[in-house]
Structures are given as structure tokens and as C-alpha cells.
Image (cartoon, rainbow, N blue to C red; front, side, top):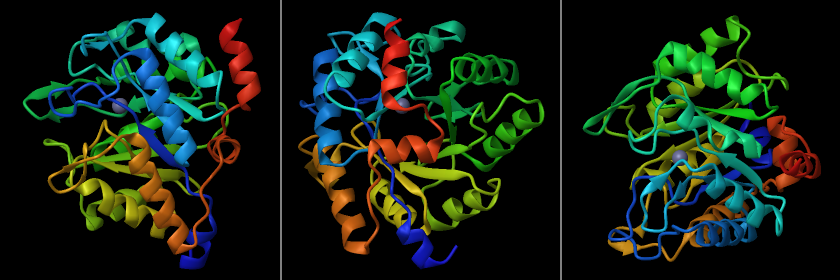
Length: 292
Ligand code: ZN
């Protein structure tokens, strides 16, 4: 694709609101309760986020997998906004296994994260065995949810493509949505060469986005804007607006990306455009199904 074509594509800005690793000690404004997570999501949507990526916590900040918490967050967001919702199926920093990782899915987020392989993750092992990935693919796609295929290295792209040959991915819409997750200790580094190598392995027509942990976040986001990808920002991945300066909140990160896209002449996707690009169901249908 030419630069002109890349810059003509609506940019999907995802905002990862709180994650499961950052603590209040590191950032006193980290959203923790369902009300705070929803409020911060709405602030991100207002600033231009097409999508919010949701983890939940207990009130003391401990990562949680309780379904009621997802339900409350999703309901609070849906009451006020049509922003695309991505529910996590992560392990909460190694706390949750097997079916405990599926607890957001009954509340029908538009997207659900799909961690496409095992790896060292800092000092622990992030386990996603082939058998687990098959279960996860079925749990997500059987509900009409679109998998967000998180790849922390090149091999994980291969894992996802193997599941396509088994008929388990990408799901009913037939559209691929990849999130490259760079800069985790144990995964691929956050640099331009790595990012573009990962993109080169994608099937034709696949959409991709990039997140990077800490300082790499903004730089990788900018490359994605220029290269026709999409971006994820937010306090799950980084808490500094610039070196030594904590971000005010998720809205400030999204605002900066929207401004940069604007400066480069790339339009920001509305939630409705993002749903169409990613093959999600329209917001009204998703919201209705989740309450029945
Ligand atoms: Zn996450």
C-alpha cells in the first residue's frame, strides 16, 4: 500500500485502561473499581478512542476475573457510549487458568484478546498451550466475538495461522485482527524492524495494531499510523506521558494519538467504522444480546 492509501484509512485507537500489572503505588490515578474503569473508558472514547480494552480489579486493586465486575463495567460503558469493547482473556499476571480466563466472554464484548502462544513474561511463564488456544478460539468465536490476536513474537503469528488451517480462527467474519505486543521482557523488542517483520507475515487483508510497553509505546504507535496499521495506547502499557512525567489519565494518551493522526492527515475511526473494519456486530445488536 502507498503512503497515501495508508493515511486515508480510518485509524482505530484502542485504549487499554488499567491492565493487571500496574499498581496505584506506581500511579495514584490508576482506574481500579468498575466505576473508575468505566469513567476512564468514557474519557478515552470522548478523546477519540474507537475501542477500550478492559481488565477488572477488586476494590483493593488486585486483578480479578469475577464476571460481575466485567458485567458492571460493560453496562456502565454501554449506557453512555457505543465505543468498541475488548474484554481480556489474560491470566491476570499468572493468577487465572483455563476457564477462569473466559469470564468476560458471557457479557459479549465486541472483541476478546487471544494471546497466541506461551513465552517468558518478565520473571514468569505466560502459558498458552496449543490445547488451551483451541478452547479459547472456540469460546470466543462461538459467541460471535471477534478475536484480537495478541502476538508477542513472530512464532505466535504462526500459531494463529495454524489454527486457521484447523478452522478455529479468525471467526465468523473471516477478518483477521492482530495486536502486536512489543517490548515485554521475554518477547519481541519494540523497534521498527521487528514491527515491520511481524507485519510481513500477516495474511493479505489482515488488520493490525501495535502496543509497546513503556517508552516504546509512542514511537511504535507513530510507525503504525504511517504504515497503515492501528494503535493501542493506555495505562495498561505505560504510565508516563514523557520521561519522568506521569500521564494525567487515559484521555491524555488518546488525545495525543488523535492529534498526531490529525497532523499526518489520517482520519480517526468512529466506533461504528471500527466495528465495520474488524467485522464486529453493530453496537445495538451486541448490547441487546448481552442483556438477554
Ligand atoms: Zn490487557
